[in-house]
Length: 193
Image (cartoon, rainbow, N blue to C red; front, side, top):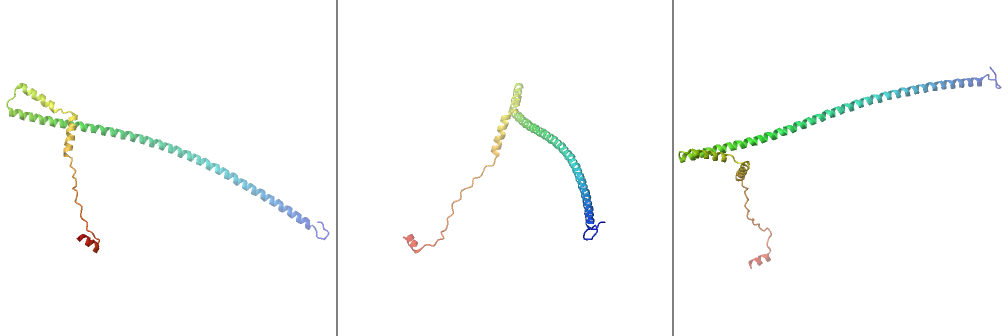
């Protein structure tokens, strides 16, 4: 060790070597810290990429499931529409059959009534001639076949005659209103004269 002019051996050298060691130690710590930060950044990027891949796969699978569900719903709606159209068609045909059956029943009842009336009439007249019976049968059959137009007119006419008549309210006479104001002596005198 060297002594300096003041007589203190190597103080500056010791300070110099200590500061060199501290600088080396700091540089080593800084390098380790940078390695750790870089490692963390690399792991974070890898985890982010894995997360993005997982999210994309999940999103694609959910989109695929939604498309399948929409296709299934479209098929169900189409099937329901077809069934509703078929039910409406069946109901329309049933209504037409019911109307036709009602017309047949009405025609049948009228024909039977006309035959009975013709038979009663014939019974009153006495024994019938053979040719007259054929003519009566033909006219009874002809009368028993009213057209749909005649039947519709008759039902409309019956409905019109059975419809309730609207009652018209009688007008009430106006009520007299009593005067509530008091007459002054001048108006009393004017009324008297």
